[in-house]
Image (cartoon, rainbow, N blue to C red; front, side):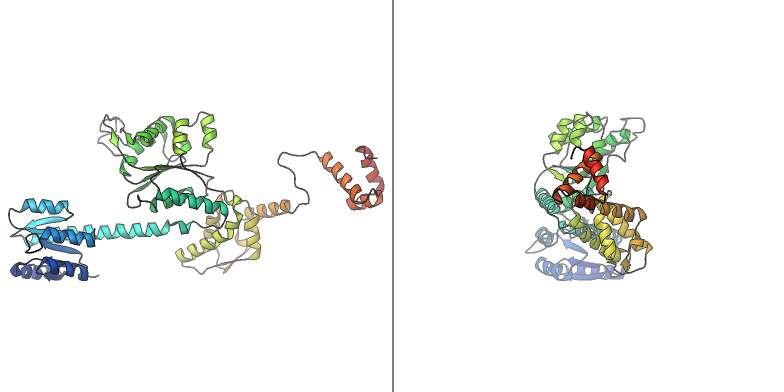
Length: 457
């Protein structure tokens, strides 16, 4: 493991030399600079993990150097060194972003404790930066796979939402269409990306808990409230709260959520104080909320406040041209994640995938590809690798699609169909009953019987 690098910026050679020796004994890699100007250059060149910076430097004082260092790297961890009684200057340095300060003459053991804590902070910041970078890469709009016009229009709208200051978004679509992926993508491509994204699944929390989870409670608000607790809305300050399946939220919580949207304030359970909050609310539902409003299950005023910018996630059956690109995407994902060779699709499987209606949408497709990667070693995905019910359903759908006559969804009379076919056969044959009977696979007598039955003679 690489040694932590520490930069010491101090114009007193005795202090610099003493610090360097002491810190090198602790197995740190130490570099030094005797002035503010040299310190800035050393910071640029050396990329130190920690900077020990004297406040009282000649020409360019420590506060100016701190300001310059923070402009180079806002996450730089700087510990200020100040003369005895220079606390006021140290406090100003803390306001400018210094991590901590230590007074001269200082105890090396105490300094080591401060440095260790500062390194932990630096490591944590680095991990957070890396995680956020990974999240922004994972949730880029380029990772929403599909070539259909309906999906591309949805992505274009979502990009505009992400770039805007809109604080409420409503995503509607069937289960498995990717509403949660879209919500995260909007967040991580917005000005709120550096702040928290919190997901709340309204169906996963009992009615008695959802309000306290969202808005928190004060000490003594109820029997088990031993201490005050911040709610998820408060913890998401500056970021995004994603409310999945909002159609299942109880009316009392809906009223409190409406106040958050309209007034940007709320009260904790048992609280008297208004808490101001700045969050973007992204709500999602697989229900028709307009129907829920008509049935008295959802507040009309909340529905219209959420519906300022509605987004519809199309079902996979509505964008079949996206099925094969999605399959290729998931093959690439699982090949990488499971460290297995990539797989090809057989022609039969492509046909099955295109004929299947995908009631579970993209989630169902993803699960099937993952299952194949886990269970099958073949480099080609074959029909026998798929669940039997999918193969059977696709075959049935294919038969219907290629049928010479499709039954309308509102039904039809069989006698009407029979009469219509006889009429068509007579027209095609120019009234020749022998030829018409042959077209229908009937004898001439059987045809004449049906003509008489339907009044066509």
